[in-house]
Length: 212
Image (cartoon, rainbow, N blue to C red; front, top):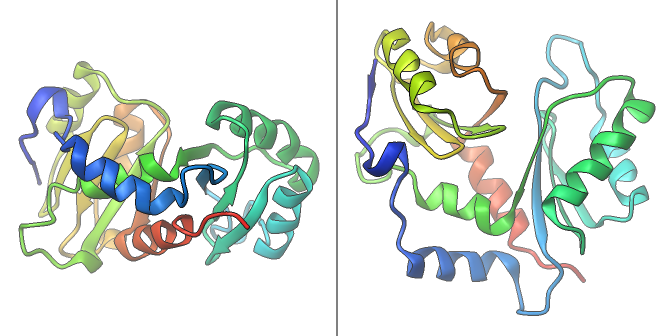
């Protein structure tokens, strides 16, 4: 397992023009309501922490969020809101336990932030199979000590790179057989939820649809 060398404390340098152009496409007209991508960690796994997506959509709409859509069963949603990301996260986190009976870790990114993470993919020109690529979203960027500890735990055929609060993981033999992936969260000491690249791109397309 090896880590790609990234500039500046593991942060991928993304041109402002590229982010601005891609971000504008994902947020709609200048006056459009901001779009967010919501990722739940650890739901609908092995029969535990069940969240039915139809009920989840109703729940989010009931909190005042608009143009709510969900994608597959792993806890992915996009919506529009006038609230800031911090406010929306707090609104959902406070209401979730009463509706579903548990408190998952919630990762909430603006459509622009989500697109920037995709644009920053360090594997995009490497010719790897995107079906074997996963993007991990962390609750906060890990520090130098945590990154050094992760490098020491790296084993096997996987390759990874960390950019801020995003972790790119290439698993040529599949994520299910990886011995490195299960130790990432514990080693970095911050919650992380992974999505395969197909899901990531689907959510980006959904987030591109503006409200209304």
